[in-house]
Length: 509
Image (cartoon, one colour):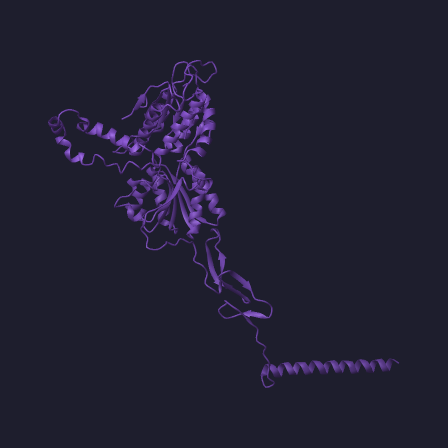
């Protein structure tokens, strides 16, 4: 297990690259994802050292620290990487820096803390700050895509849960803004951190009481594991999970207990990228370490004695199907090459003449050069981009756990039937409403409410405008007799007034 004071893996070189990976944590088993990334970094550096193209006469070293999933350990390891003789924040430094760049952790939150520490020293951290770079797609696009996929499936009523850190808070803010733009209503937005069990219980209670059947979970795999565990214990099922790259491909989440909650999940995953030669490199290193007899040289009888214990394992010697799971490892590979390309430019390397080893390179120089190289690398490296149009979807694939027979529904209020109209519910989002009968002269259909023209009125079902009927009164009806009586009375009264008025005029003359 690593120690923040000492590198987990190290090798000195003329120039050195540091790295922080959370290989061990509070879990029983180590993180094979982070271990794979550490091995990818070593593979890339050894590949560069063997090559005569980038740094012909300069060796690249590495110092890889195990942060053990702790922010405190991460800070200690960062300080250890920056520590070195005659290296300060001032301009009076004359010595070669011990570390020229740092490959940060997989979680944005941890790397942001790292960049704040290394920022004043301008040590480039490949992973928004003056010395903070990344070789993976921005969460901005993923957050907006979550809202688009919710709208695509017609889910207008959703819940939202996020990790209470930079990764979750920033991503959820972008999602909520995009959801509002797209007319999606969010019933609740809650958050928790993996070390806050009380907040987790409140989140579970909120989900339990809610009516939204779709949950957008902007969580890391650790928080998602905790959430699934509690949802399984309380038997909260029938939910449609929308996930992010942080957990959607995490195999440790798929258990017999969690599948009835997780089944049917939909989300975005970072695409797999094959690193040529890496699978053979890892398999060879594995057999050399675990099964020493596979490398035994000498007579066959001695080989048979040494390998007798491992004969069952040796049948799998050429098996490498699990190695290509390189969704994140390839980004470490790119990060190493981005730094080395910067050093190639700074050391004025030429393929035949070599590099100027006498030059003193400081991190701020690498930082400035990396800023250029990252952009060039993005458009040149075929692992990144095939064409301009492929930029976004090259990073994220839609990932689906098949479970539901049909698409779930998640709306606050069902569509109003013909003849009724929407009436907003006080204090609730616009997606929540009551259906009340249309007023006289109004109808409703699939497009909304309509007012009938003057010569039309609404039918009994209030779903169609019909021409008003012309009705005639009979003289034998009471209403007809009354109207005729008043009409004749009015006409007679008018004639009488006219006669009297005419008589008064004659008397005056």
